[in-house]
Every structure is written in structure tokens, then in C-alpha cells.
Length: 219
Image (cartoon, rainbow, N blue to C red; front, side, top):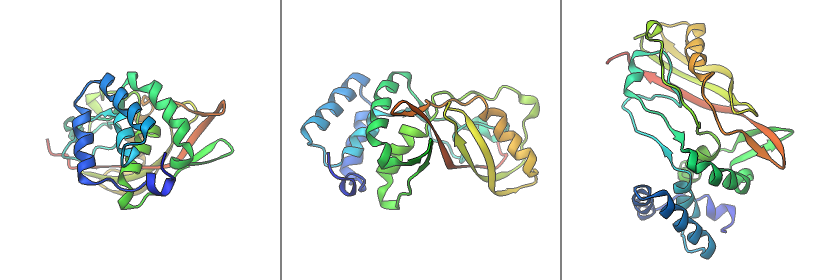
């Protein structure tokens, strides 16, 4: 395996094209191809191959939708990332291998490492490994949906049980009040699930994560 300075570098355009083609193939083929690349060290950038190994279901949307839905009319145009159940065994293995490259952990608490714009491949891999939910519920209560425009940036933590905790706002631009927006985020976040992070038998939490929504209220 390349050292961290080489392994966390950006990927070239051909690497992204190869990764895109791989994502359209079967899970079995992905596992075989990735295992082979790791064993012989043939991949120019191992992070490109490993990103395929923890591929999540995701459909891009026009709005900035955040990592899970909230009670907002514009959210109907969004779909959300979820780690596939068949990926979890491989995710757990890779988490152990890349823990110190993706997170800084001390006394049961981890914070994500900072990445430059050139390190987008490494950043995306770390996000998939440690910060992508295994379950994202749908918004079921239509009676409380708002169509107010909303731009919000917030921080949160993933507890050692894989739950969203500690939501606090950094930026808010909306006619809605801060308590209203926090409740909108918490309302569905309480049902979001992450694969709990464990290292050396210890359950770890991940703190100081950032997310946001930019929703116009236009259907």
C-alpha cells in the first residue's frame, strides 16, 4: 500500500472513468477486482478502487438535500445515500485499515481529518466509510411540511451507537426560527442509523461533522 502522501492524492480523469464503469457491474465483480488490485498493487490510486468497494445508493438532486430528509416540501425531489447491507462486511474491514487516515481519535471520540480540494477521492472514501447511513427513513408526516425557503448549515455527531446527536446550527437564512429548523432536522434524524464505529473492541463516536440544506420551497 502506498504511503499516506501518495495514497491520499487526487485521482486523474481516467481513474474516475474506470471507477464509474466499475460501479455499473455486479458486487461480485467489484470485490474480485478490488481484492486483486490491493494484492498486486497495480492500481495507480488505491482510493479510487476502494471507493467502489463501499459504494452507496445515491441519486443526485437539484437541491442541496443534506444526508437525510426533513419536513420540507422541496425534499420530494431528493434521494439519499445508504450503505448497502451486502457492503457492510467489507466496510468494517476497511474502517479498521483506514481509521487513522480518515479520523483522529482520542479517548473514545473521533473527528474527521481535513482534506484539500485536491484530495477529493480520499475525502469521499472517508465519508463513505464512516459517515454514510445504513438507514435513511422517508418523511411520512405531510401535515407538518413547510414550503419556506431554507438555507442552513449545521454540525452534528454520530454516537457510539450509530445515532445522530448534538445538532447545532452554524448558518441559518430563512423565515423559520432556529428552534423550528432544529426540530425539522431532529425530527427525522432520530430515525437515521449508522454502522457503529468500533476499534480494538471500543465503541467510538464521531464529532464535529458538518451538513446542510438549501431548499427553495418550489415544487
